[in-house]
Image 1 (cartoon, one colour):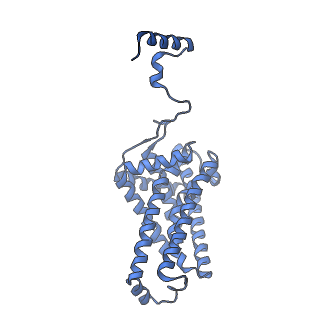
Image 2 (cartoon, one colour; image 1 turned 120 degrees about the horizontal axis):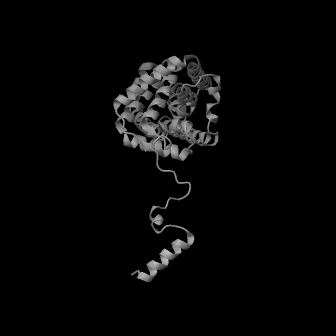
Image 3 (tube, helix red, strand yellow; image 1 turned 60 degrees about the vertical axis):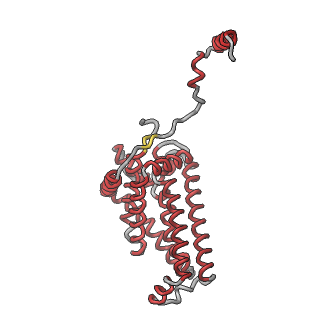
Length: 289
């Protein structure tokens, strides 16, 4: 039990060091940053963000299209490489893997939308947008996403080998009817179920840590772990709207891939701009709270 003398001694010590007695209860460590506020959003927010993304694409069409064209060319060259090297079993994993690195590839598009929002001029200097707050945390974010892509490719190759052996020409030697028939065999169904289930989990993880995290990292001088946790918080607080947005993005990219990536010239910039607006309506940075 604390005596009256003990209380007096504590008060005297506070007076000596110049600290009020009641300040200890509200002590905040130096450098402490409060958690970023995350808004509750609805499906209307998702669709309004998409509409705003289309508007930004129209305003910065020439520069925005450059990013889409670059992504299209990368996808096309990758597809040609896989065909030439007869790496047919990696065509689908690499195509799906485009979703995993997309958030980092869209940083220039976030910068275009940011400048349109603030009334700044949009020019070719957006190509250096990744250096806006330094490259360290952007690199770390990119490393995490690239690691996820590598994990996906390795696991996809293992799943393929366990079901069909290490023969990359297995499917290439089939006609369409044989391919469809193979898909409904026991091993075909296992391959499709396990592969798509693992891919969905991995894609969901990447989406959760990056959907508003990368735009936040670009917008404000925060570290990549803060950006990741904020993004996860945003998804956890708004599961249904974020799920719908994720499905929309996956659907758009899938259709674009079926058309040899050509639509990405337009669809990728729109997705990037829309993601920026989704971030702006979901996350309230500490300096704006």
